[in-house]
Amino acid sequence: MKHTDSTDPPRRTPRDWVVDTGLFIAAAAYGVLVSGLRVEDPHTASTIPVWLFNLDQAVGLLACIALWFRRRWPLGLALVLIGLSVYLEMVVGAMLVAMFTVGTRRTPQICLTLLCCGVVASFTHSLLRPELRIGYSVAETVFQNAILLAATVGWGLYLQHRRQLVVSLRERAEQAEAETRRSAELAKRQSRDEMAREIHDILGHRLSLLSLHAGALSYRPDMPREDLVSATTVLREGAHQALQDLREVVGVLRAPVSELPQPTLEDLPVLIEETRQAGIPVSLETDIPQAPPDRVARAAYRITQEALTNARKHAPGTEVFVAVSGSPEEGLSVDVTNTPPDRTTAGEAPQSSKQGLLGLSERVSLLRGHLEHGPTDEGGWRVSARLPWSP
Image (cartoon, rainbow, N blue to C red; front, side):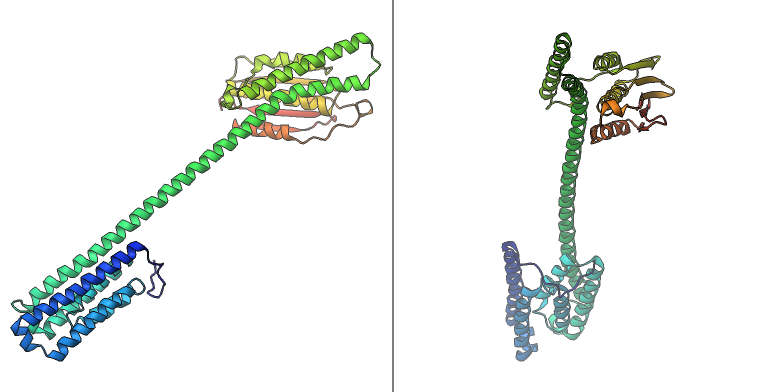
């Protein structure tokens, strides 16, 4: 990551003010301590000129004041103070604070380079100011200073790494939380879609039968009383059954979709018989040596149900052929075909929203099957599905 000292830092927080104040006091205290030691030491008091001592104190004070800008220009300030420490000693406290700041904000390569500059400055200072290293050789002085500088920069690098680790863990936690929300929303959406398909399949068939019988009543208002009673009885029973189906759906609306009433292929004869009673001639042919898995059987039933519903709505008066066959080796096949409608007697077919076919496509895709639908060469309509035996 590229760093520039000219980048404006964010506004100081109360914690930043406390830290900056503490570091300023520590750097100033270092200068005061060194000044006191030099005044009390008769050897250094006699060898250091007064003007140099005063200059050292003044520059040390300015260095401490400059620490308030360390967040804006950490690297530049550290280099300036290292340069001043070549000859002056009371800037060392501020220099250590500046090097610590660089350690918390810059890469290890930059920090290592800065550490080398500090060691070179310490070596040069020991050569230029021999009166200050009383009792120690140049090598000992440089070694001690190098340990102090390395500890300061290393502490800064440690805090930087710890801060980055905390930020990384926080980001991972936020990403995990966001992923959990996305997964929950996806599961909720899938549950709603599946619920919508089930409600459409359960009620669509029943309501289409009611619509067909009601249409027959409006088309033949002068039918004999016996036929009228029979038709109204069918309507009443159909409405009652539709109401029962709706109650079952509402009753388990908050439960998993698997708890909704689930038909199987054994219910196909009942479905076919209901369609025949509505006046649609339907023939059923099955060739299944053994019962398929529940999911596959339920999908086959829904495909047949939706195809019969569409035939009643869009091709009344036609003959419908239903063929269900399959085996564990070949999978399950469902074919529903109706003959061409007679538009002269059936009238104009209602506009289709194709929601039922879209729901079937989604259902078949979830089982990794294949669905085809479209007109036949004779002018009828065909719905064909191929489902794997074990999805």
